[in-house]
Image (cartoon, rainbow, N blue to C red; front, side, top):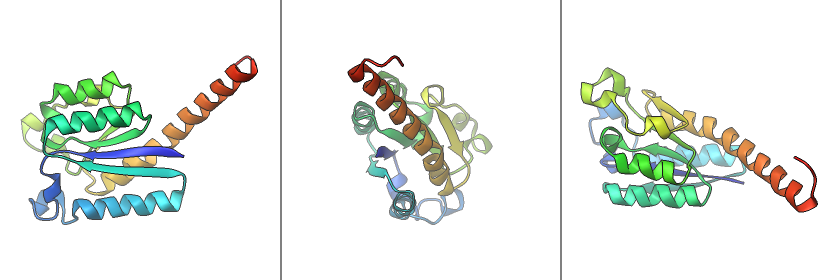
Length: 164
């Protein structure tokens, strides 16, 4: 079974009421339900959802996920553009993270065009509303499955003495 932690940053707890013309009308709970439904239909995927308005909490969530070997779907929200700490957390635990955004950040204010996270993420998905999370899920699961099967093969080879 693969594990994915969905980590959401500041103000995402207000989805559905916060600027619906930009972020849509779905709540964070709605997005979580969509992903739970997707995981159930796919099978073999365990999801953990976390949200905080605090940068330190997000660092801790990323570290915990990476140490546990979970993949990460990360919507760091405004911290995307400012947080070296989140970038360093991903890198420090070699986390497989996909950066997501509901809106197309490149079609918005100039300060949103730069991400401190993109360089350490395995991919970036933005501009598809709640479907950005679905796309990240669909991209991340096979990467985690491949990693886990490769690790299992290496472990089996080490215990049996079989060359890799």
